[in-house]
Amino acid sequence: MSHKGLDAQGNMFNALGPIDETVEAIELLSWAEGDTAQNCRVVYADGTAVVKIDTATQKIVEADYDMKVTASVTHASISVVKNKSATLVLDYIQHFPASDEYLMESRGLARK
Image 1 (cartoon, rainbow, N blue to C red):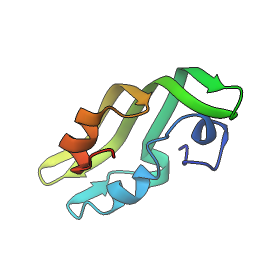
Image 2 (cartoon, one colour):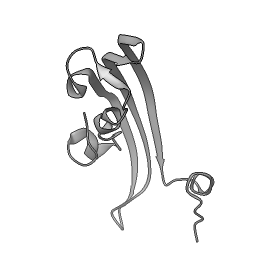
Image 3 (spheres, helix red, strand yellow):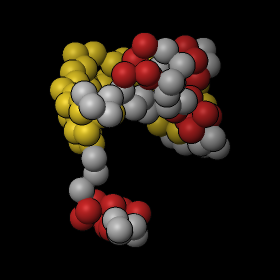
Image 4 (tube, rainbow, N blue to C red):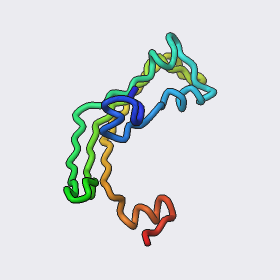
């Protein structure tokens, strides 16, 4: 799994992070075989970035990130559901800088 700032994927894109810790925190979840590391996979593919840089300041002024993420879980057991698998495909899209509306709605922040 990719981790923010710790590998090539995590340095370029905002990786989803250590979801294995989140999965392990689910008390009702157990594995029919193996462990979390063997049964929980996150694959990043076809990521793209378009970045605009102010050459005078050498700072990023605008960027669009688009990352394809496939998360899969195998051999999971929860309650009466035994040894099942699931896959989730995400299109993880980010824009920098965040809009004023997003900052207010999601974080309660306003630019000055």
